[in-house]
Image (cartoon, rainbow, N blue to C red; front, side):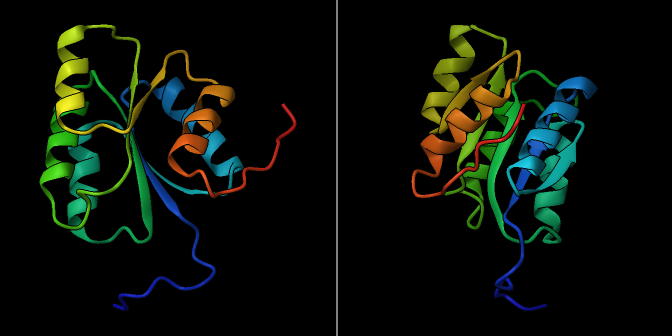
Length: 141
C-alpha cells in the first residue's frame, strides 16, 4: 500500500457515537461538508478500525463520551498514546457536564467539545476552530 494519499482522496473523519440518530446526523453533516466519514457504534469499533491501518487520510476523530464497550475517554487515551494518531484533533460530543470527564479529557489534550443536541452550526463551528485554514461552504438548511 502506498504511504502517500492520492491528491483527490477525501479527508476522513472517524465518528464514534452509540446513538443511531446522533450518528446519522453527524455522518450526514460531515459528508455534506465534503468529508469521508467512518461511522462507528462505539469507541472499541472506532479504535479497531484505526488500529487496523485500513483507514486513510484521517484528519480528525469525533467521539461521544458515554458509550458501551469503550467510552470516549478511553478512545482518547488510546489515540493520544498512538504514534500515528496521537496528534489528530479529537473532539468529544457530550451532553455530560460532569466535571470529572471534562478534567480527564483536558489532561488528555482533547481539542474541544460539541454539545448535544448536535447541530450543523455546532459541528461547523468546531471544525472551523480545529481547521482554521479550511474553507467550509455555506449549506442550504
